[in-house]
Image (cartoon, rainbow over all chains, first blue to last red; front, side, top):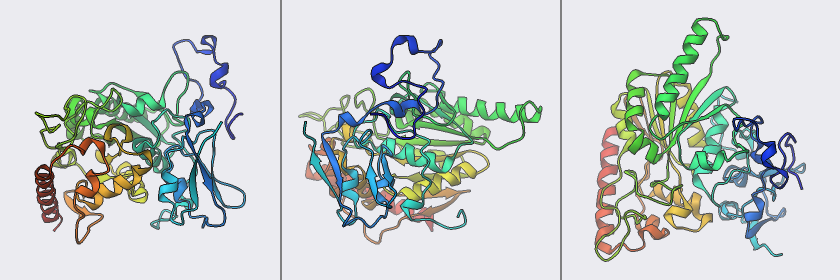
Length: 105
Length: 306
């Protein structure tokens, strides 16, 4: 599973070894933290109800990860590769279109 | 688009200069504030970051969350490094080594790096009048090392170095009024902001970056780990801090005060405090004392606005 729109210069975390480090510990690719999966920290996942969604974008603006994106239909959804499940979007959603459900194996 | 005040979240620029995949705690108010602050700054910027949560979460080797030029400095010299970069760019452009262009220099630091350790460097840089923006992300303690008190910790808060118990009520000194210290330097722009008011925050950062000369923006960043509250309450707590008058949002432009959100009646401070574990031990009379202090400070601020 690799995230969308990320260049592949840096390897994902599991494939990195010390041999991949540049001399002098220089990081050559800007923003390569987007290779790092924070989604596995999650204990609750947000479920977006498209019937209630008014496409306002309040979930997008208040997401500390910046992982909520607008899809082709204009609805907002969280990229679960990064979503840490904080629940701010569910708390702030005006129409209560987002609910948090426990993550199960 | 720039001529109008935009209050539509989906029209805000989609480009994230603070990349996802950073290691902030779940529900971090500071990560949210950095992400929002990076939106109006754009690409032509050099960011200087002090040691602290922002540095720890954004730059763990071999990854970096920054999609803009970024340099890490120590606690005590953030403003000094920023002023050095600004002067260096100025002289390189004057000598014609690099093309004439507008590059903003932005320093970002936590409350410890601003009001405790880096205060002298900041004061010097503001006094010399360098053209830079200093953003303080105030989470009211040294959070990345495990919640030690700083001079920005509010009265009565329990931290690991000011623990509450039978003898002590926690922090026994009042929060240092850092925006007032910055305003006392008579710099062109001082503002306070909070990520719970995202458009206000982005406006203030854009205004601070556009101001010639030093600008200072103080951002309250609720911290679920250190303040001990549920991670989904981050934005609500920021809003409560403003609505109770504990952290009023105002700006000082060339000595003129302006209150951005004025409420005819402030909410009681208990609304803000009862949600946080760090204030759980406080008795009725200590809360009354805090309430009186908040009322007095807010009245003082209203006097300045007039």
